[in-house]
Image 1: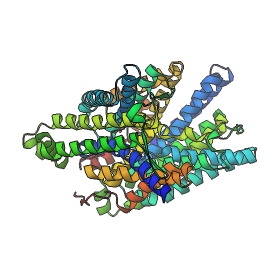
Image 2: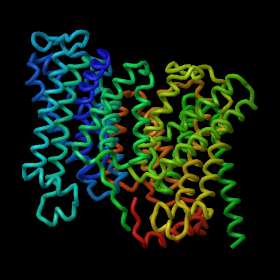
Image 3: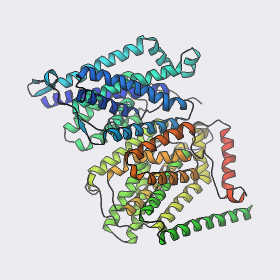
Image 4: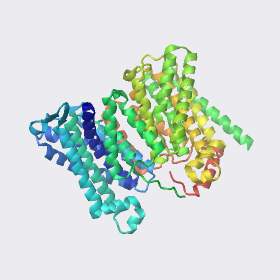
Length: 294
Length: 333
């Protein structure tokens, strides 16, 4: 029982990180139907920015998180403007290849500057290093922090999407781009804003991962990126609450599989679930079936 | 007409024989040294991979990101068989078994997943390739993450040439048949093809299985040529590399895939010494080409030998006629 509880807690921490990354995937896919492969590398860059803030400039956790989010926002905007905007009317496969190109560029560009070796985040001290014991169940301050920050960011995101004008524009563009444009919505600005939002969340996830797992490297984004995408598909791609549910689900599955002896097949199980979902309900958990029209 | 066709066939044969002999001469005079021979092998393997993925993605319009998975099945099967049976017969058995096994897995995976469209299929095939890789990491017979070493080499330029030409001919002839045209019709408009009485599932699975079969051959050649296998060779990046060749050459252009495979391999040989910068330049090249020429180098056009004699290749005119007819329905990818 205690082990189960511990696994649930670990699963929630990991799931929060997947959910944060998955939100970026799902928003971008919802709005321009692109699997943004570069997204997982924005997350990696976020982790490195956090590392440099804490290690080289000795900033605290919160300022590092905020700086990382701002830098990632700018990076997301730059990627969108330079690489994706010229391809607005190209075929989707061309945009996808570009996304892969951007992803490789960020990975190996980072590798060129910081070398391929892993780096570890500075030790957390004071309040950040605290642990709470409930019998045999251990909750670390970091886990509480991850959950709290994720929840705050998700509420903020929901407020932006549901209550602001630009959020309304985002929903309109994802529903029907041409109609939105006819209604006077600036589609380009809306798409850029979507990238900015998603990248900010990825940056936050990067710093949280650095603090939680302590080790970062230039290729750290690839596998979590794929899994976060699986999470987005699981919840129904393009649907924001779906990505959150999917993130927590995938995190929980991964922790449970490795907790109960299957750690070697952990990733295979995640991808197996993906294929199963795609076959049974391709639109995901919260997705609606749309008829294809000629 | 018949006479033109015959001269075409003769010309094709002469062209192929000349290519073979010239490169064989360059190898035996050591102008193509051991290092360049590796490049040559990589080019041939990439051509097989790219042409077979082009059949799936370029001609049938089914977006697959799992080609490395099929390749790894072929590679491991061939390696395991030749390690236990280090004879020429063992090698052929290995290539054949690898290709058939890859095709079989392609069938099992393709049948349910090919109902999915577009990006969903891409993600499903990506997941499949990852699962295959993880299984290979954990199996005993494949020696886990450390991989297999000392696989006997039976592949030389002759076999590379024969298998490459064989697969390219297999696929281009398949595309000329009524089955191939059915595949192209599915790419242009699946619903319309369905309405015309084409069994879309059957042809999609057929194309997928043939693609997997050829990828299995490519994998077997890889295993036999490079002595050494480990699961991480066949990761997501490998599938992406093949897709990049196909898109760079032009979706729906076999000659485009061949040119792109040669071009990319030569570029990467020249940039070999730059390590990380090589990948950065590769990535930049990719982005720039996609921004300025999103349809790839060749579009969906073919270069046949008819360029040399202006007689008009039967394949080319037939294809373009068919494409015109289909394009009038405004094609989408």
